[in-house]
Length: 445
Image (cartoon, rainbow, N blue to C red):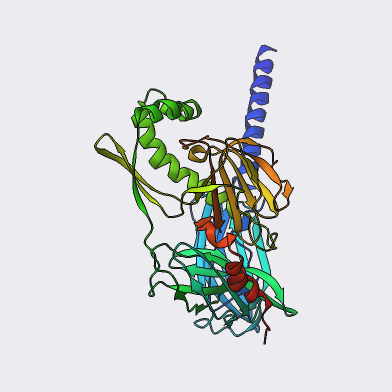
């Protein structure tokens, strides 16, 4: 009897082990889940040349093979074929370039198919298939605005038409891209792009409209321009006193833990260099989230009864004693009135930022649409709320001396696609009429 019990227990153990091995083998070799195929970007059209990137994952048996092909007129053309004999490949990113000319594809429809199989004994295969349009004709760019009279550090507007709807379009100034937006002019779909003029603009500066269609075809058209005022921006030396350091640097030390233990002078250098750069990057990111429609009208208003204290483009060299400790370029206009003077929205729009912003202190940013925004800094109180629609002249707070300010004033700035430009132009009704309004009232052929 004892021997029978031992045999019984041994049989049970063997059955359990066998069942466990069987379950493991089934999960490992007989799993039925197909690999997952993810295409990194939508593929609606393929132009003269287009790069396609995919990610294939299979967490159980691993990837056995990946292939891709395109079919047109019953002709199947292989694009990609990869095999993975070992089971360890759980994820694979692959890319390839479709050159329609080399593959002898013509304009019209084609079918793009991607497949992936795993190492399961069931040979699970996933298939991703789409009908795509072969379109090898680049868009045609027709510049409608003829006069592009520009000022260093200022703003310019280009208006143009395209022969087809773009995936992306705008103006490039050297390497800086400024988004284009669709508008209806004279009953026809056109595009406009506000772009910032570099302070060191030259007749050889490259400025051009660019457009890319959904197939990846690109076209461009150079923008002729005339530099109106070749000006030299002011330069100044600012002496940094111990009183300023003792009064202002604790404000930054309290808000940034990494500055704890640093001397006031070390804090100044950090704020003027690293924090200034980070703040500008933040402003650029915020201002690129803009309404596609124009939200403003007529001339932007200037703070009432205020005297300009610093101008756009002013170059500053900071000295402590006899030693230079940093440099900066002023990216707005400082306006001083009475202490805690009312700050009003310079034009209608939507509030897209309120809060403390490093060197700018308490700050409000208003989006005016199509990449144009205004910034109000060093404020004492903020009464506008995030997402609030504001009208031109509506109160948004009061002036102050928060941030890197030595006294009560308003730092006012205008940004175009996040790039700071000279606000003075936007206060000038003649500039608005000649450089914006007249361009939007043209007859479109």
